[in-house]
Image (tube, rainbow, N blue to C red):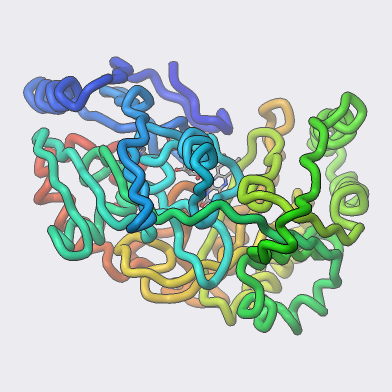
Length: 440
Ligand SMILES: Cc1cc2nc3c(=O)[nH]c(=O)nc-3n(C[C@H](O)[C@H](O)[C@H](O)COP(=O)(O)OP(=O)(O)OC[C@H]3O[C@@H](n4cnc5c(N)ncnc54)[C@H](O)[C@@H]3O)c2cc1C
């Protein structure tokens, strides 16, 4: 039995295979085709939706996880897709190098993170898929296609975010930089003040984001910039690992209270306020490395929806979600996370041809239980965004929970599907999720 990290979805694949060479992988692909088996490639299952599920063959690339080369003149790294972001980060750090940004966690594989356009924040920075400069893909026929902006560029633009549907990503080349320190300043701020100022802040700060705590008018802004050598001399010491009481309060008590709130929903606004006070009420400023600047403890399994919308529509969208919460009297968890990402030319990237504001909505699963309002709330928020902004302005993050048709918002979907049909005419790489999401 295989389950994703959030334990929302599970499946019983006919077999789970972890090849340790390209030759073995090619044999698996060819054999799957011969016996008419469906096949899904999987990373470490951190996508909260059903994209990895299969009753056929599941292939993991975790044994193909080497950093193949580091080019310090071009400032790029070539890495196998089975490596995790954590493994890559550590190997670069050992050489005084780093990736340009990081998402909130580093457990994901490179293949999974690229497969779903994993992103961080900063309008001068692209998501991981569009940062890729070269990529190698094994198709359902077992052929290897190398591609870049100048070679097989059509496959390149499609494959960089393809949810395992065009083939298996084998290697990617990514930009790197010399290791640097960051100044991370976090500031509590009122919702109305953020509404008035975010547009300037997002352009002035390298990596700006903010949280909004539903049922309150609290936001927590985060300003993160690379610092000068002088400032970098005195980084803030790494915090000690959370002690017993801190862990008890921030994790175990929180999970327990959310569990109680499954039965007494009116507790949720109080829990939100209490935890906003604990986590988001003080201004902090630290000098730290890339990992500390970008990652944080995402706690326990959760449902997540995330939508990329035009940057100037950020508060129209937040007001629409707040309106849906109020109208239906939903009691919902925190935080709602707002990040910003630069436009790109990757066909299925939520940032295709426009700078975007991502709005991430969370509902936790205390001890694996869901609130009866989780899916009604996520669906109502998605409807509110579509009704207020128009479907063409609301692109879902492919790794997360969504209901609406992708064709309404992804202008390159039909070309993607046509390419998919030509690379995998038998539909060997499809599953139920992809047939629903990627059909026309
Ligand atoms: C706690 C948490 C925090 C997160 N934070 C962020 C964040 O900050 N920003 C963000 O954008 N996302 C975030 N995510 C989402 C996460 O980055 C994506 O779901 C990512 O795809 C997970 O990687 P994975 O290795 O688990 O891939 P999986 O979930 O295993 O697979 C994801 C998809 O990629 C495909 N795939 C996997 N490997 C390959 C390959 N080699 N070739 C082709 N296709 C492949 C799979 O078929 C599947 O469709 C977060 C998720 C969690 C659970």
